[in-house]
Length: 173
Image (cartoon, rainbow, N blue to C red):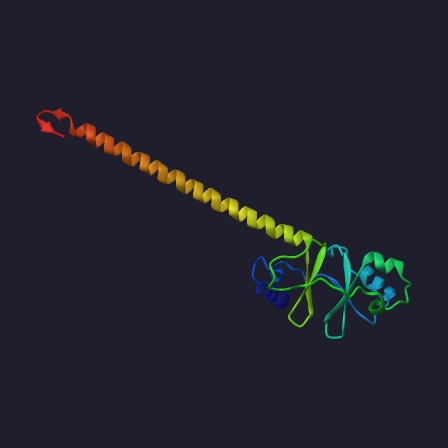
């Protein structure tokens, strides 16, 4: 429950609002074998893992490895020794992300908080488009309503003009 409250605190459309906290992170002292065991222990319904994030003892993001990297190195290699440390990440307040399968989201201290996946970003874009379509439909209906009322008003004016020119039973309308 605390996790959900924390995530709801981020503005919609930002990395913090789109991120998931379901990612795999291991300490830099973990071996390739340790990391593979962590991956094997994930529940079957865990989201797809593209990368394993490497952190220090405080949770600060230090590096990343793809799953391909794990299978290329010996089981006894330390993740801190084989990690890619030129990381692209974003702050929770950022509204755009690069086109990569999963981008780490960090706080102002570099602590790994979650990831934004391409699927999350596409969902946000689709929601924006759907919202825009709804607004356009509402404006279209409002425009039709105003046009109809204007037509009715003009029709009433013409009828009043015609009625004013008629004489019925000595009464002048």
